[in-house]
Length: 480
Ligand SMILES: Cc1ncc(COP(=O)(O)O)c(C=O)c1O
Image (cartoon, rainbow, N blue to C red; front, side):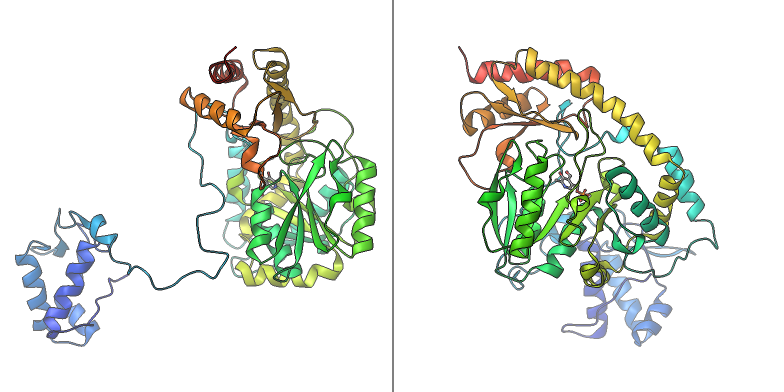
């Protein structure tokens, strides 16, 4: 690939070539050691005389930007880019384009986390448990020449993966779906985005749980929806508090994010009846129910006869890796074409070989085995965490919210407010412990204060020390 020499601007042609190359070196587009085309070649490309290019090269060499090596060619001189990044920062003009209202202002969700020694990060699995060798083998098999198509594919995802997903949700979650009802997505997040895109018009009311999952709220808001937080009690989302005009209700019934409660069966039935009476869609985000440590799983909303107005969303971000970006939605037939079109318009489709590899991973029983194996690891961590919260030095400060699934637990402050947990989290952070505050998941002030503690990233051996440091932070912030 060749550097684009621009002939724009004032001066003779040699001066313009000189300026274009000099700017390239200064702003880092041309790096020390990069080889420039021979003057004859560049002259042909630019349709100028060879002498013109030679004049520019000579001046750049005289000023230390280029060096010629006999028999090898002309190169960007070592050290010629000193200060390049400083200049690069200035190369994009300020002002100009602005995002439309709703997209300007501060970035929404927080950026990537920085790791902590004792890391109770929420929403992540243990990446060390991923079956790397098996995955490499499956992906490598897909990349053998002449196997899967490497051209464009359909927007709904690889047919083998859709079939495997339909079998999986039917078997494991009693979600009755055929391969045609499944759309493979880039994580659960894209499923939410596609659904929002096809269902919502600006000004539509969307109900979400409060506290809840910020990226879902933000996806709905980005389409101009008016998002209303609805409280959650021990039975899940309080259906009687839903705004009458809600067009879409987003819920996490298996394991409410972040509180952890499961939506009770009566509440599920009430929600479905409400959605039917108000002609609303329900998005059921079943993001981590593969890890269930007590109780029988409750029937998903989709399986309770809500299939016609429920979009069931799943993800492999917890069972496998967030970075794989693999999720899916089971959509009612009435939305199928629209959602497929939305995916096509968004990014065409997902990576074919990766989707095919996941289909094989599922078909060969490897996903089920991996979930069984990792569930044992997480079960041990979970019981250590619960024991530490309920019996150790944290018990005077925190009360665990009962839950039976997932990779995190929520614990509410027995006394005090959000300022106390923020101070505790900051103090713990200074001692090498990351603990997230419940406030991070609250859109409105005044909700209960507490901590949300993930056990995906922290190993069992580190849990006692992590919890002890957390308890020390509580003692320091709330003495006496
Ligand atoms: C409620 C909820 N939904 C979905 C996800 C997964 O999102 P994705 O599949 O886009 O990684 C998470 C991850 O933290 C989550 O907490």
